[in-house]
Length: 398
Image 1 (tube, one colour):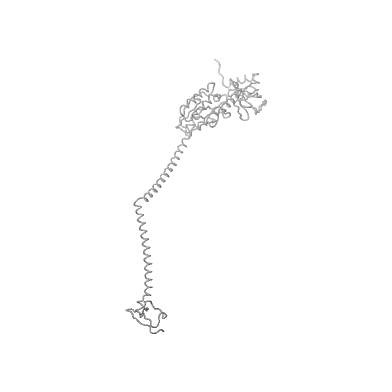
Image 2 (tube, rainbow, N blue to C red):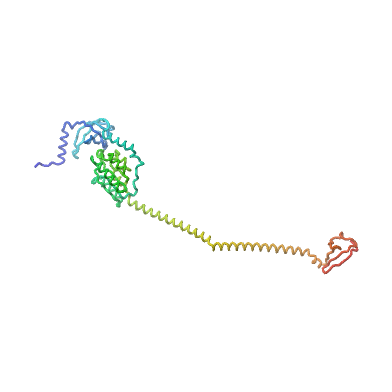
């Protein structure tokens, strides 16, 4: 029986084999760059063709490197020169790049851009078609891998915010040639269940891992869905087709779970605030109604027959008092005037004067004589005294 070796020993052995290989010490490889990233001044990317891919690293301080990192770009095709090296601790290998030559756009990138242009011209990216995510979603569908990190993150985020929410998973294959079929089936199945919102995505990955989410059939499934859809592919560098067609795009499954769910504790607080506001509104309405009732009541009392009769009585009494006042004033004035004329008549009463020894002298025709100029010697005169009259003749005039 052979003696077992450690993982470290095996990785070290493979590393030495690769290091000693003359061909692997300097290779020229043609392929398309994808998933380009920078970390601590070094650049990492995947070089791929239609069937395979290999990791590549550009150590910018590597003495043999002749790489203009500004030329590196996802979707472009390059010829890479460098050596194949094994990372002993992780048991992985990569090309340590010393030189790159840009030879144009890669086939996949060209096809992807052509598809984006086609769908954009059809209007499938237009904001006018985007559906609003419900504020109070409680039934949430998820199309993703059954055992992946994405569903765990989504489920935890949703339940933490709202323990009463229902999460319905459609277990889909999110990577591989047939992945688009399960994604499309998942979207269509959940869309027919009358859910509030659907999350479609996975927990990140390279551009190669996201092929299924750049499939035209997935785009049509998302666009034709009646249910609002959140795309959570987890690739922040490039927008996938599903990101562009979906109603909302987020960077991670966690962000999708957070967006799809409302905070139940805040919801309870909102309900309490709404209740208080409603109580205030109802109380205000009741007070308004009471005031209107009192106003109507006062109006009815004012218009009641008895009230009208009482007002007529009061008006008649007021008029009687006014007439009585006017009459009293008139009587007082009349009495004063009468007394005035009585006194004036008294001052002119001939009988009173006659009692004092005066008489009234008239001529033969009864005309009053008031001056000697009105008589002549020989005229007959009548003198009326208080108790009779005397007929006399004028003997002389002085």
